[in-house]
Structures are given as C-alpha cells and as structure tokens.
Length: 288
Image (spheres, rainbow, N blue to C red):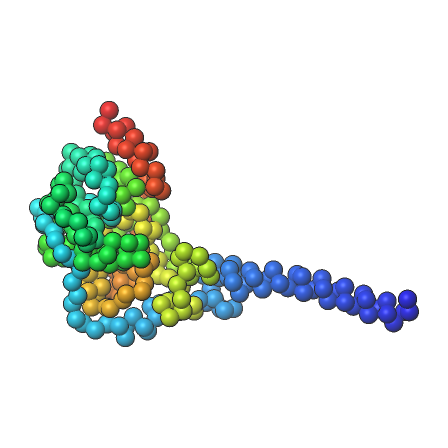
C-alpha cells in the first residue's frame, strides 16, 4: 500500500468516526431536544405561549355537548368520573365510597344506541352528545366543564377523575384554582412527542411551541369558579382534532383565561392504570 493510499484510508476512518459521533448528537438535539430541558428558547428549542391558531378559532358561538344530566346540590364538592357505561358494578362502588365521605358523584359517558333507563344510578350520569371512544376524550372533558357551568356550582371543588384512579377524600385540597393530584408537567420541560400515541401533527399544535404547564389527566382538582372560566373560553373555540384533553383544558384554555399555573399535591390521588381490582381493594382498605 502506498503512503498516499494509507493517508486516504486514515482520512476515511476519521470521517466515519466523526459522522458516527455526529449522528447521535443530531438525534439528541433535533429529535429529542434534550438541550431544551434547560428551558431555553434558543438553539431550535420550542418557544413559550399559545399559537395564533387558537385565537383564529375563537368564534364566540357557544357549543353544546350535553344530552342528559342532573345538577347536584350547590356548595359541596363534586367528583366527575371519566368512564364508560359498561362498568356499572365499578360505578356503584365508586359512588358508595365517595358519597359516604361527603362528596357528590357524577359519571361521564357518551351517547349509546342502548337505552339509558336501564342504568343504575341514572340520575348520577352525565351523558354527552358524542360517540364514546378515546379519540373523543376532549369532548367528554368539555361536557364536564359545561356541566359545572350550567349547574351554577358555587364555592365547590370539582375533582376530574379517571375511573381507575383513587382520590383520597381525607387529604386536604390546596387553596388554588387548579391542583394536579397525579402529576404536573411544566412548560420548561414539556413539548410534543416526535412519535407515538401522544404525537400531534404540526397542523394541530405547531412544532415550535411548548405545551403550557398542565395537569396529567387521571386526577385534577379545579375550583368551580376556575372551571367556569375555562368553560367560557372552551365553549367558543371550535376544536375537533386536539384530543390531548389535559393539555387543552388545564394548559391552553387555562392560559387563555389567565389562571395561574396549577399547584401540585401527589398525595391526593393514585392512578392504578387499569388495575380495577387494586382500586377496589383501596376502597375496602378505607372502609374496614
């Protein structure tokens, strides 16, 4: 091998080493944006604020998402459980546990071809005017906020709860407009996922914006006055494709009506992630 060829081979090896080290760095900076967790808006990091799109969608025409509901007594705290109509046995256990501890309970479901009259505890269901599937979760959440506003709940805390989540009725609720009982995701470290279940297209939420600080979905406590403010803006913005309801309601809409960032108390709730047997055991541990 000549000296010239040897130098050329060495040059190629250095180039390959350089490229192999550059590619992981590119993934880290461009895809996962790890440097952005410092909170900076520089170096290609998403910026803070609400995209202009949401202001353009503000049509000031109130929309309705409710088919059937019964208002609770004003002045006491209300638990609104996101669920499906096939879990009636679970609903009975949830209802009994929380009503015995001084809370009013309502179950959020969507419309169905089956008769509602056969539902036990019928007066405790909020039935929304939408097909009951995961993609419509933001409509279900909207129906909950509309329920709070139309029932004129005053001086109450409203607990938005997934049906596989335990809310501790004995833990003190913080005196804040919104409290994250499961988890709070801060704007400094929160933006769109590049892929997967929670990915949103650039048309729905621009890549160059962070999400506002918001509460993770399973358990959020909102005062009735804050819920009404959020409803007032949510009812006038026409969105059909933003199905990350936690970001939308406790992040985007909260910011638009100038409600302070949520407080956080993880002692309030425990998410059992679909393990309903464990949830029922939790209820029983407080009863026995």
